[in-house]
Length: 225
Image (tube, rainbow, N blue to C red; front, side, top):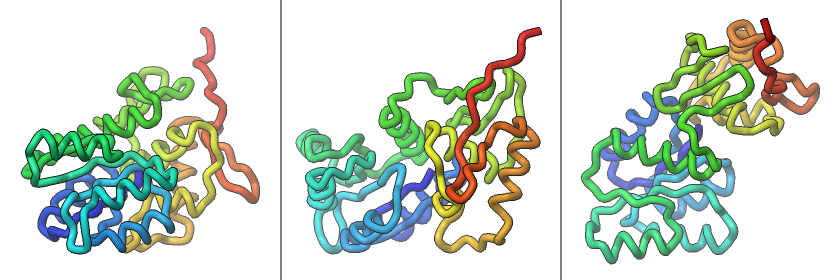
């Protein structure tokens, strides 16, 4: 999952980025409203973490502009203002959730994951696709109820495909969900991850749509005994 972090405090931003990376989020960090506007026009994000007070204005002003223009990306707003009126203003201004500084990083991650579940209309904590169950919180996968060990990038690839709900994702779209701007990516890295997922979860788990991209294969049920 790719997240845009809009936070001008470098120390706070570094802590958030490190914590989110441990939960397999790809994070792009910016420090101003202007940079946030530019980022959201050039990249598709699964969620935005938006600070209220920024050097060039109020984050709530930018959020209002996004909502009026039809941008529905889930937004978790951060603020040092703990007054009830301020929180109400943020939520009524388009924020999907609100977190007051200082906050616990575990709570931020839990709120972000809950926000993403709501945005996807997901009730169960785990995401199911036929014989596969993926738990985005504890980063675990089972096949027919049995645990399957996946490395970080394999988990991120599976999550991107399973959340796409059958939509085709191009190679560039998948790379955007697996790698940050500063990551060095070998030319065959994505193909290696696809091969490993097929090896561990079945060759039909990922369907290649020639010339277009990839999508999750049919949700086959376990064969009857």
